[in-house]
Length: 273
Image 1 (cartoon, helix red, strand yellow):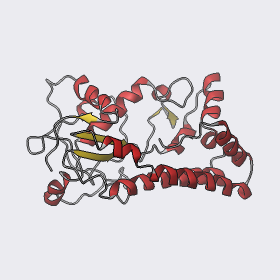
Image 2: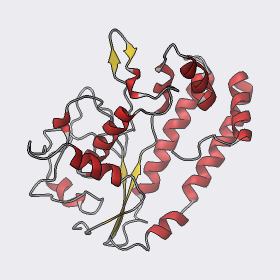
Image 3: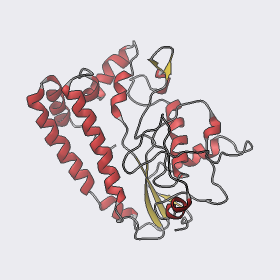
Image 4: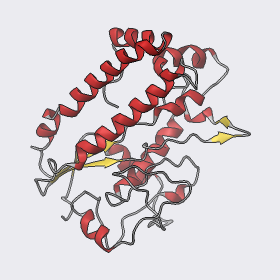
């Protein structure tokens, strides 16, 4: 996630905005505009990685952060640490102007990242690709009982994800990698169903990039998102059945491969263009 408000000065400015009302929202606007511009214009890391032969860079979309406000647990760790670690989201009231501003900024970060990767600046080499994986674009929290958030997906501070949620995210990342660019699933699916893990098909036995998705997109029927899917201008939700792994394949194989891909570079055979 780009430019977290981790420094004390940034936290102080953010806290000042939260305690204040509308006249101070402009300070937050200036802060996030400056951070977003710096983040978008930083190309050096991509230039360095582009020198690595036969590399794929997975860029995970910025998390939809407003759902964190509904994660609550009657513990000291959840009550105190969550407000300290993410005050800009947790402290404002749900209908406040400050909270609406945070939601807008969150969506702008997502749009900026999509715009950055929609250009052809990363498509100039046959053995290097940067792919946006959007499974966190629309983030849904599982519930237990009547409207109560299942906090087993979060650690003791009700902010960082638990091992269970990390495993689900690894599966979601793996599935995104096996979906064509432009037709990737743009939401998370926190369930215990391990049959949702996808495997490469004989027709497309590779990880999808923008270039090798063109032939698939030209022959595939248009995507028609279902009632539970939500899309952005650059990301549409995959529809129709996806290839599932055979029962003989251990569950940990794609999960381990997906966790390994969380590293910036995944060297390996170049995917066909």
